[in-house]
Image (cartoon, rainbow, N blue to C red; front, side):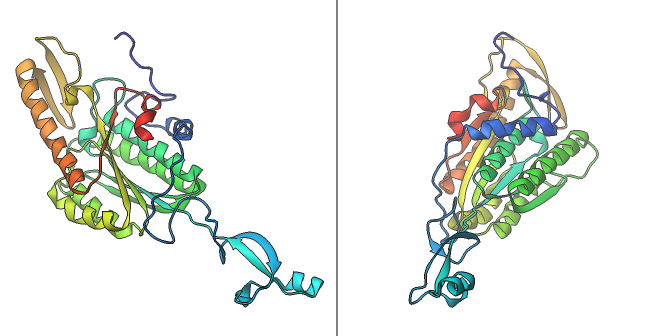
Amino acid sequence: MKNHPQLPLFADGVSLNEQELIACQAISRAIPDRKSRARAALSGHRNSQIKGRGMEFAEVRHYQNGDDIRTIDWRVTARTGVAHTKLFVEERERPILLLVDLSHSLYFGSQLLLQSVQACHLAATLGWNAIGHSDRLGALIASETSHLELKPRSRRDGILQLTSGLIKVHQQQLQQFEGLKKDPNHLFKACQRLQRIAKPGSLVWIITDGQHFNQQCLAPLSELTRRCDVGAFVITDPIRQGTATLPKHFSLPVKDGAKKMLLTRKSYDAWLTSQRTQQQVFIELMNQLKVNPRFIDSATPLSQQLEILR
């Protein structure tokens, strides 16, 4: 195919490895900084300018009436003969939580990358961006056969647990298309878990193809949006969106999750309608929550879709 985008660094488009997720750090640096919209008084981005009791030492000044006596710097007081108190810059690390949908429907790709690989690239990019701003990073990685819960951690620990978790679940899913018992309510249960673990003021990103969310998910997500900021990304593919250029007559072998099929022009139109209908359920669900989903194309490297991440 002419002018086909090149694969991202270290990626083969199907499997997942540590190097390609580390390479997402460079993409994360291109995302511009945005002011936090934390809803909880003690959550937010960066260090606050509030001087008080905290984790990071700021300065020493003369003791004033009303200062907490526990902050008196006794060494400086003894040396100068005048009471001095320590001031601190309050650390305000905001928890960032990712709900990464790695259902079997995402193991589909007509060009460049599987949707599941693009979902992992996006999750890693958002993760690198979070720790780059000294936020705490956690995730729920959900599939039909497993749920991996990663509690928010700071800096290196946060990104390491995310990348290793993505690789682990992605590899398991590649090997488990057939013969295993699947939970049809896996994303509803993931939403319930997310509601329980997300602290007030957290920023939550949902990454999905939108194929397995239903109205059951509305209740836990509604509760989540009352105390957290929520955003959503839909991972798409040209064949599934109807944006691919196809001949008038064709016979196209397709593997959609564990299902194998042969799409012709007639069967493709019916299949495309079902794909769009399932995705629309998720879009309408997000609209009910007043969340505007963003669309990421798996046929284009994430580095060429930075405007969508801004």
